[in-house]
Image 1: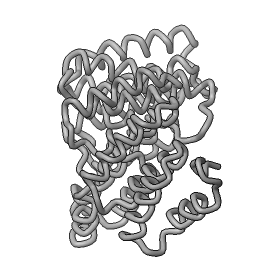
Image 2: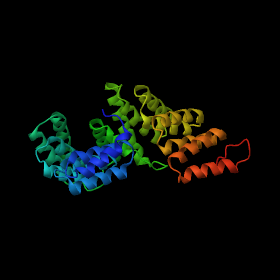
Image 3: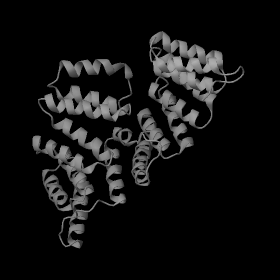
Image 4: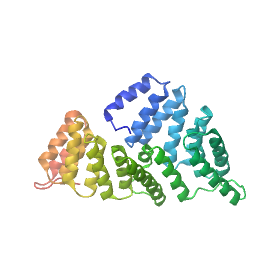
Length: 329
């Protein structure tokens, strides 16, 4: 498993610009952005790669997986189809396209492609053969008619669980970033959680799996479980900056501002040039009434970016607050 390394972003972007025809330059940048939860930018990186890469099959495949993980099955199918067009004998591409087609309700196409995948062989062929039997039975029961209605939630969840089990980074791509998660999103998130829990049973020392589980648990409203997973990631890799930031956010949500401050201080030590961690620390210290410490954090942010409006606003709130209060909003 690859660990998060935010120091690599500039190098990855430079390489993508310097090597626009090289597929790996774009997929590595997109993978990093996906792991950071910056899905829009990950998609932009992959779209840029599609416009310039010499062999775009892997780019189409990765974009298709991200879209499928997010429940956008029709868009996922389009990109996975292109991956198969470019590399028609690659078992993995054919299998994932068949799964996405089935999730999109295109059962006849899915079954036909599963037949081709079984004939092609490869790692996982036995599982595909089982899926083929299930699909053929579904076709027989439906009178061999293509299903055009939206797939049931349970089927979408099953597909997501299989995808995350094969590529756990997709779990971070499907984590919703809105304040309120829809009911149908809960099924998808629980499917991702099951897949990650299963992977962790086999690989308990993988910090990235604990990090992904923490993100999913947070969206499900399971703060205690999310905190536990984030702390496990940090125990395995104490320099895991993203996990530090995540743990700070979770502790702040749970009302444990001192614990949040501890994690954001640690993140600031690991990445002293990151304005964001100093701002987060300043905000939580201000909420806790620790005016001098909050002011120090805001000034550190301004020392990195003298034009930082958020730091200036934080200092203004401290100045405007009566003595003995934190200047919270």
